[in-house]
Length: 229
Image 1 (cartoon, one colour):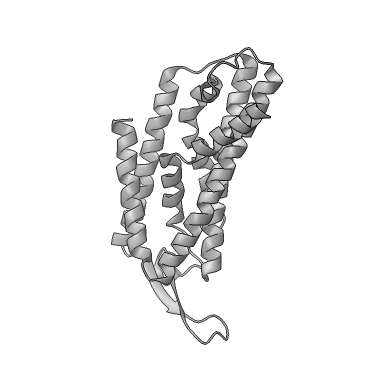
Image 2 (cartoon, rainbow, N blue to C red):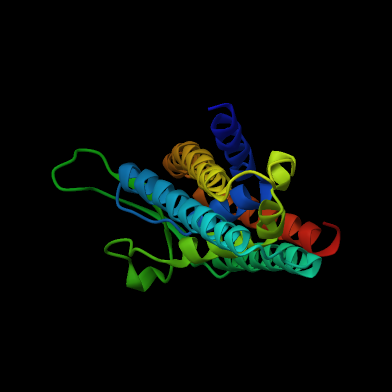
């Protein structure tokens, strides 16, 4: 139980990595909806799908490599870091472009018989106002892409100190799976917190400013991963 608990905690902490959380936040700036509740649901959904892609690739990839007795070369880890940085930059540039080009806009309207109008933030062309937010596999795919840089370390059992290499294969696979569950938990909790912040920003008519701040932060952190990580 101690090993399983440790794996869960280590996975939880891994999910709180700055690059992972920034990617989730950058993806969430594209959230749109007709009510704050929809805003919160979408932001949380993005975090969960990102976490699922990340945890699945780590658990399945590392589990398969450990079962086969293979290891990945160092350049794969560095390549994954660069890929993550480039993706953060792309997400940030897209967000900044949305603000500058007027694709991030706000407006107010009433819902049904509600007495007061609500102000909302949307991404896209104003003459093609979205009727509903479409589900996307992009968060899941990006979550898996961000897991590449951690795949080698997990395969070598680095998060567990590397002293478990002689343990039974079933134990190693269990620990890796629990590690993935920890990632899913932490990223999902971050999604809950982010959903509340995004909803509050929209309600305060600060949606465009929040979008610009998140996009700029994504570019800066992405540049750091590409150049100095």
